[in-house]
Structure formats: structure tokens, C-alpha cells
Amino acid sequence: MTGAAAVGVAGAGAVGYRVWRDREPASPPAEDAKGRLLWRNWSGVQSSYPAARAAPASEAELAELLKTGLAPIRPVGAGHSFTALVPTDGTLVSLDAMSGVLAYDPALMQATVRAGTRLGDLGPALAAIGQEMPNLPDINKQSLAGAIGTGTHGTGLGFKAIHGEVLGFRLVTPAGEVIDCDANNRPEVYDAARVGLGAFGVITQATLQNRPLKRILKRVELRDAEAVYADWPSLQRQHRNVEFYVIPFTGKAALITADETSEPVRPRGPDVETKTLMDLKTLRDLFGFAPPIRRAVAQALMGHIPPEVMVDEGWKLLSNERPVRFNEMEFHLPREEQIPALKAVVAAVETHRNDVFFPIEARIIEADDAWLSPFYDRPSGSIAVHAYYKDDHQFLFDLIEPILRRHGGRPHWGKLNSLKAADFAALYPRWKDAAEVRRSLDPGGRMLNPYLRGLFAA
Image (tube, rainbow, N blue to C red; front, top):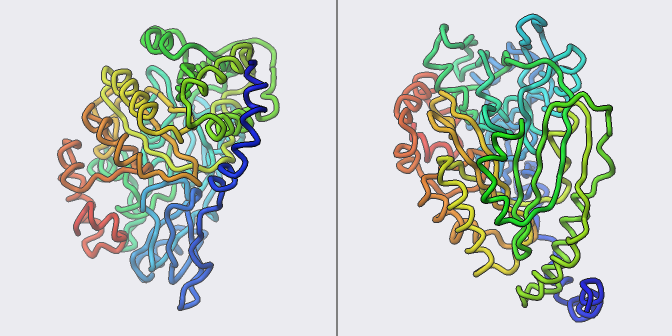
């Protein structure tokens, strides 16, 4: 029986199962008993009812708000963090009115950018002045401040996370003070608050070390997962940017590479990744009960998919649209631990969780010196495990997190994890130093919601 025929035969019997699985998760009420409107993050896993919302248009407005606004005061960007960084019953602060490029230096390839600028808007703005960020994350909906503050990153040998290219920034403290921070001016604030979780105050602008605008060739191809594991060290050296997604229950991995090129532009075509993801979901729905059949059908269907190749400026290709919502756990491990941990994660999923269909992502990130950076003093390999937003994601904590922690992982600040203050203190050599700087800037804990108070205990 061909893969297509098998899908057709199984389809009728799976209809009821799929309808049950595709129920929309219950949403909190649109407003609470006090008439406060709901705030909810992108995936729906975090929510709150802020008493006040503000979008200051200047540092002066922001300074006054931080001094007098109802605490806890929490900044918000795109809501793409899965941890409870944003929820507050106090004041929710958006920097959307503080966006755009303020100044640039074409000789040094530097630009000073307002912190509310979304990464998706920053790409074309920098391209207009002949610059590009050295690297970009998988999703570009985040604000610059949110990306810096949570350690958001791309991938590639020699490439740091976004905050690793921040030469300096301006921080408005809860006392209303405006501080210019860099390696020479208030270096303790620069080191502690570069990855600051919005807990030290609010960053209003940052100076970025960029690169000349380049064209890249991006290639996406399916390979046997075991071959990618074996070739991973050489692939890192061969390509400017490289990552891969292991597709559970298929034996396959999608390898994604990007290299500078002078070839003519071949624009990115229509979105095929969303359809592919939903096809993997259908495969799960039809054959989740029988992993060997699921694997055989998947390999039959994937056997003749050609590589996808595109050429364009990097800001157009390195980030992707992700319309399908999910919840995510991502840990950053010592690079030598990445593949052993990844193999253990895939084995655990394929042994215990037939419902998982999202691919599992692997990237590499260089070390930096920000005290609360997951990459502090350590070149890292990341592993990101996703769960469809309609599916139960408790397995991330019960099954996946113990593996990643055994291999020395530090969690992404914006991704799901169960770590507490003592855990972070053990993982971060400068944790206590950062906490002292934070306390000196915010002795009253005005920036701390319950989650952050549990970490920093002001």
C-alpha cells in the first residue's frame, strides 16, 4: 500500500479522534470582576488583568510612569515569551510608541535604535542604511528590548545572541533615573542588565554593532537524522548559519543552511512550512497509535521532497513566519553535550509521547559576557522542544526538562522551565552580583511580578 493510500484508508476512522484533539483551549474571561481587560501571551499560556496600561512616547513620560505607576510595573513587547515575565495586576507598559532608528555610523557599522522597534521592522530600516544585524532569531515579531532582555538568539559558529552585539544602552530605572550604560560607563549595570528580564528598569534604546548588508543563499533539505547528527561538527564549520529540526517518528531531519552569495535574487516562495507542519499533525492523528506505520508512511511521503533554495538579503530569510501557535521549552547546553542530549530527547519522545508532531530544533550560539546570559562564558548548543498549543505540554516539564538539566542546560529566559532562584544561582557564576545590582536600582521591587520576585526575592 502506498503512503497516500494508507492515509486515505485510515482517514475515516480518525475523524472523531481529530475533532476531539482539535478543541480550542478554554480562554480566560475577556475582563475580570473589576472590569479589567485580559492580557494574554501569544500561545495563550500566560495571562493577567492589568489595572493600568501605558504606552509612553518619551523617556520623560516613561520615567514618571516608573516612579508613580501602580506596581508591579511590567514591560511588554510582542508577548512571545512563554514564561511568566509579563503578567501583572499593576501596570503594563508597551514601548510601541518608542521605535525607529535614532542614529547610525556608516564607517563603524553601528546604529542606535529605540527599544520598542520590532525586529521585523528593524531589518528593512537597517537595510536602508546598508547595515544588517549579524544574526536573527527564528521569529522576528519581538521588540528589540524584549529580544535583548531574554537572550533571544539566532544560530551559527561565531555568532552571538542579539544582546552580545549591544555596545551600550539607556535604562530608565524605577526611581526615574536615566542611565547610559556601556563597558566603561556604569559597567556593572551594562553587565547585569543587558539580559535583564525587564527587572532592572526599562531599556529605551540600544546601540548595535552591525555588519554590511549581505545577500545569502538559504537551503532547506531533508536528510536522515543520524547522518545530520554525525555531520553536525563539520556542518557548523562549513556554513555561515546552520540549524536543523529533527522530525520525531520519521527518522528525518530538516537541515537549514545559509551562506553569503553573489547569486541573483531568488525570493522566498509561498509558505510551505505551515502546510508541512499540519501534514505532520495529520500523520500523528492518523497513525499516532502505531509508530512503525507512522514512520513508514512518513518516509514514503518524504522520500521525494526536493531541497528548497532561496537567495535574498539576510533579514528577509533568516526569520520565519510562525502562524501555528505552540508552547516551547528551550535549553542551552555546553556544545559537546548537545547531540547526546538531543538523542536522549528524541528517544524519550518516541518512547513515551506519540502525540508529539512538532520538529525539535537544534542551533548553536557563541559565548558572551552578560552576567545573566544563558551563554555566559560558554559556547552553547540549544535544543528547543515544542508542543501544539491545543495539546497538553506538561510532558515538557516531566519528560524533557530532566534530560536537558542532566546535560548542564540553562533555560532560555523566555521559554518554559521550572527552575527556581537556587537553580539559577548554581548555573550562573555572577547571579548574586546581578541580583545586587538589580536591588540597588529597584530596592522596592517595583519591577517584580510574582514570578520575578520568586527569582530575585527583593
